[in-house]
Length: 398
Image (cartoon, rainbow, N blue to C red; front, side, top):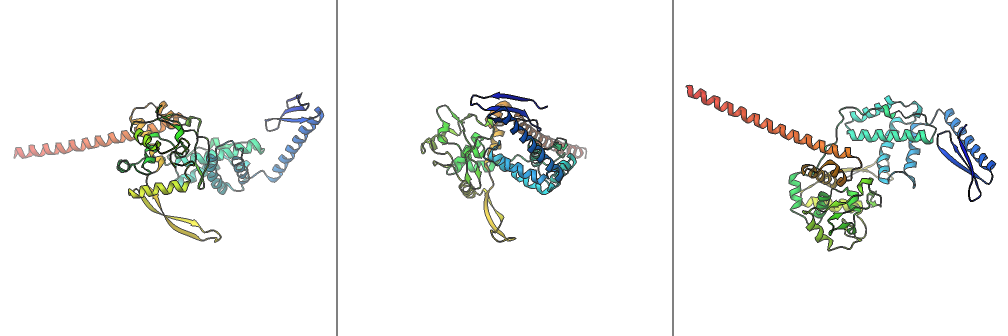
């Protein structure tokens, strides 16, 4: 028999608190104990009827549960960030196409593994497979918690070995030198990215009141990512992202000069009382990079509205250097400066120390490759000298 608690509240209502069939506690209220009990019994009856309908139907399909999960994470009271929900939706769509109308109870670990193997065969990065696996697991968890689900097989579906690892990319030495030689215009943005390591959304949400030149620190308080073209206010990505970033000596002069032109309420990147839209950012950055020869013309395709099957082809100038590449550069500078990984985690705003340590390990691996090149060069020079000495001895004998 489920546990229950009956109590009369200060407002005169009686409360019945019971454990429901899904294991969760729920409260029911009434003007009498009997009324509260009746409401609980009606809820149990409704739950059982819905469960029977699902059983007769053969269970909910993956597509049905995925749609319900998407509605849940995009609702006004969703438990996750809006940006996170946007990243989930792509995987929800792709997994719906793959599993379709397959009943949830018929999907096992091997079928999920087959989907991950498919991503591997398509050349997708390991990170893509990890994200897809995470979203599938969330859908199964939602099924179990709210829709009479029975199991989550994802834990037994492993990521394929030897998947392509996303390459850390940062601006080349030549690109950095070119940008440093042109600090005007969006060159200030490049310095902001390089010397703070902020995420683009954090930088777009930064206001001059968050920059304390006297204390020598920058304290991001909100993010302004984009949904379509418009930005929206959002909490920072993780709790660790609420941090103080030291103002580096190399960046201070530009920061001091720029701060004289603005009020505390102005946004640092836009220079106005509102943050940049996506098109404003992309357009200004692309023009700046194009003036330095750091952009390329790319062919783009889009569907034509109200003309099914028709595709429009157009060309767009795209910058070769991105804000996130400068974030990678900031992490590299921390590593080569000998900053401990715990401190680097704090400055980067990583939620998990493992993310920081993974970056540091990749940089160590790159260093090892450099030493390998040095050794190969040494051995090649050594062989060359040996050949020269051998030829001299032969000539001397003659």
